[in-house]
Image (cartoon, rainbow, N blue to C red; front, side, top):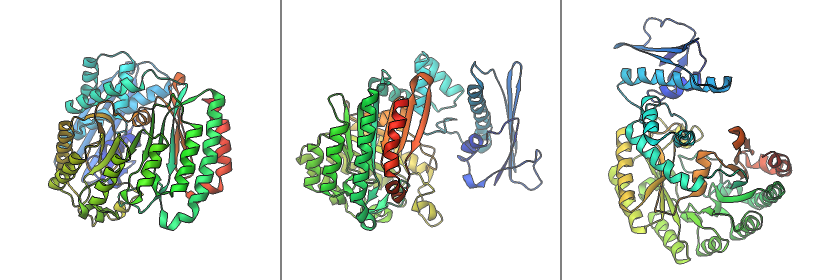
Length: 493
């Protein structure tokens, strides 16, 4: 248990974000006592003191081995109260991390950038006109990033800027949620419904979804906005029947796809939902990119995580996709799946090397509260941090040897290690939607159950979120109001 006393600030979330890298989040308790009670194993005192010349910070961590104390002084830059508060939060995290790194003898590769979009900060510094050397110094000295993460972040930012600049408020991207899967994987926390139990609702869902598509598209057209990219995800979109997919793709094509649309991605993730006709349909409807996602190419792992297909099924689906003409295929894999070791990861990589996809997204396992793995935490054969780091290094090296480069990156809470998810691809096969959703400089109109829109107001440097109901039944019950809501929301963009 780590007990924490804050003085001069109430940045509990930020403090917990740092400390959660050194203990279980559930073991962090905020207390109202300034002096630790006798017998407490760990006590953190974080203090912030603004004054006319700037702000002073001090953090002390006390445990059985003694006390580590770190002090800092900063002068906030100009800004309104909200901006100053954001700066103060960063100062508290910086000061706390300095103390924690020494006390626990463990550095965090991403420093105080505990959010899921570390590259977004690099873009912000670039947009302010800073050169790369100044950015490197700022990221290492203040944000406390490890040099290798600074290099990775800069490499990805340079690549992304080829595709996301100039920022254009007249363009949006569209995400379409299909919340059905053949089975629910043990690590999954997305809103998804077992198709065998909910198949009676899929026709109604497609009908409601196409109504929402038409309503959103009409509002976009009236506002003079055009569609940059379209991404159909889930769940597993190919869980739908062929006729349902035909209706969905027809609606998407009529309402969103035109000569200015740069990318159209369909997740065809599970091989047990694919056949030749579905893959042909995806190609015929104009999709420029698909994903076939094994997560692992080890059958024992597939069984353990709840997949109902074999490694050969993945290979067969991939080769079938090639035969019908798909020339931009991404594959997702996960590092740190229970029971896996570095040799098993090497086996997965060898299979991927044989298949030669255009892109591979490498995830670090995140144990979300809504997943089955979170409930099984006491009995699962977890992979330790050092092994996951070795897996990531091996994977990165292997994909680079295939001619791929990292092109987008994001992090998640509750990851097995303090690492990241990275998208790799061959040059000119970058997933544009993936970059736009991460860097938050383009509005994402998200449709369907569980879909979360991001409404970007570039001139105000502001972001609003609009969440559709996660419950399939609630979405169906409110479908009319949800569709009508776009006629009010989109004109404000």
